[in-house]
Length: 419
Ligand code: SF4
Image (cartoon, rainbow, N blue to C red; front, top):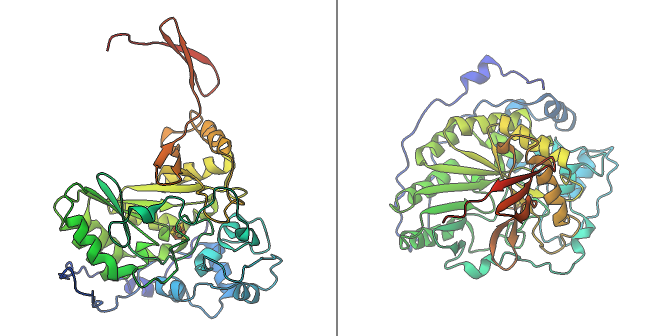
């Protein structure tokens, strides 16, 4: 893929400063007021040839500098089918938009550049553009299938497992996935969401020494400004029993320009810090995303992927193998393959479980073990992640374990009888 080279002038704009952590001490019951630091200059970022051609065709008034500014991308996100039809004229896609869509439409111009609007089966388009199918309810679908609201000791904090919590840091994302498990809370602009609830969550975690692992998700935490991100990370890191912090995000995929030098400098101050990145399809693996992942990996952040199995989008062994193999070259370890959660109106996204098992069967033994994620169902009702694997255990015979391998050849293992 050809990369547009930046100029010497652009290089000179790079921000080389490295500021100390902010001192944002907070009284637990007081409203949060965070003063942003002076605006930083733009970081250097690449643009792939196809995306640059898209920019020149559909956003001719937008400079390369603006395009690579994540604030510009967010503030110019596409919010309506009308905008899609007017800006991308010539599109033959017929989109059925529900009037009172539960989940609003939002796509960054960068992520839109990956969609072929003339192809109604474009995998990224199918995952981002509303469909009338969302109005159809099927057996077992629920607005909150994981019952997270039942395990919230304080607003926005899920404490389900003994030693770890999930902090729903915001209800906003850079782009909204139509199959989102948390579509009942994201983009709802609830008064008790976002920064205003952080202090209660921080206080709760500080009062619970059994919590050694905090997953910061949402919504998407990386849509906040740098100083806000630094504030929450520093507050969590100040709690002695919090051993690790994890961030769950799709920002490096839908808004890779957000992974700026200044953000990475902040993140690396709060190790051990892990990141789970939400990938869907090999089309997402652009030069921009590679740059974002490399910056994060170079900062010592272990990167894992999370992928939802989606009908007509990625439910194909070859597509999945391509995705997971290429993720390794981006220094991202495939971590979870999720069976799609039964949210309301999700039947058109969901596949039979046998499809997920088929995909794992086509990966295990056929490619690097690092490229094989855990296939899981997040049990409806709050049962947590349950792993699913193809059956390689055929039984026992005369003290031997009888197994089959990835080529369906049978092998015997002399089991140990002494405990
Ligand atoms: S990025 Fe995550 S939280 Fe946001 S809409 Fe997509 S799946 Fe939901």
